[in-house]
Length: 147
Image 1 (cartoon, rainbow, N blue to C red):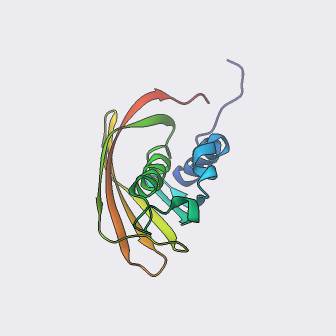
Image 2: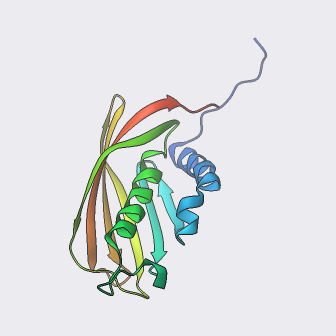
């Protein structure tokens, strides 16, 4: 026995550590202008401004960008524990269009987690609270994280 004992992080500290590690490598979310605002166990809150290069031929935010944003929020909520999780199924319902200049807030919350499976809901809304989209994602733990 080496005498060195690794102490377990409290759940909030662990969420902050794990998501910081993931954020450091997430070039896709950063390239879309996303910002990670808050994290906790099974929780993430992010923001994304709607830029000109995200607007479609209808003059509204392209649904793929809305989906990508919600998917990133989901990813950070699902990866706030001491393991690596990936999305295995997700869906989205669009409620209102995003528009150029909007700032979107995504709030992801764990619904349940059992065994290797997790279920997460993400609400995408404007800063004024208008609901833009509802996203639901199923995660699967693929590997424990190295200590």
